Length: 371
Image (cartoon, rainbow, N blue to C red; front, side, top):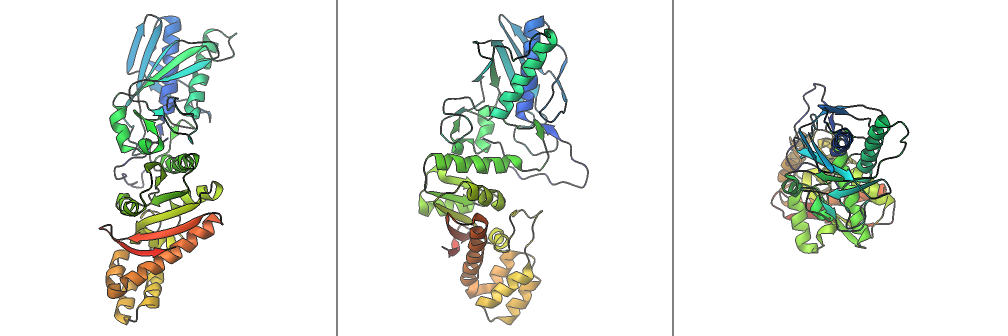
């Protein structure tokens, strides 16, 4: 369950980037403020909570409502300088007395419900991850203990989390593919959003593998982008839950599959991305890995005797330019890249999974393969 942005990332400029707070941290703060108001009859302007690593952020209450037997608080999420699709959304917690046994949870407007096995929560549960659930329970316990020092356990409270507009924003995430319907997930292990850490995307990759395995799918397709995914699956016709949006995180996928193997893995991607994988890069983002054009020129020399093209490849500005230079040998070059990318993947997986690599051009035409 995750909320990676589908928009292009803002690029760091060398200035220190501001950290933010996860959806789970906002939900915990809102729940704590609401429970305090329900017990005291009044709201404070701000609420401070303690996060798992000891941080103590303070949040301003954006919404406050006290009714007959319930209190509701909303906090606007600040993701710092991270390009998070949930940045600026209001996270609302409504609390009321609950059944004995501690804190229970419900999904309100804009929060999804789990429908598939393989996620950290069983089908039918609101998509409020275990980390945020623990943070909410601890924040409620802290308030209850402050109001009555004899209290040492979380109160018996029902917490309903809502995110207005969450159902629409969820369309930009991978939730539907993971079997989370109706809205967003409430996430966050530490409570802190680290800008450009990409942890949410890798988390989504891992949950995608978990869901596919739980459905006993023998074959998953991991792609670097939408074009290659659509082109590859037009041939494979795999169910949506067997499709993994790997993006640039080849290492994140391969290392997780090594520990959680599947029978068959097809990797589909553009030529430039798979050149990087063939050269051993595990992060394929342009800001974090570069094509070695000398090595790519050497590959061209294996399949072509055009000395001018081979020499020009050494100083090419893009991998696609090298593919153009290959001319009639472009297919042979793409096959060689696919073969080397497959070897890197197999070495990383260390056995147990059969791997196929398909290379695509910008128009979604398959130009290379290895299996």
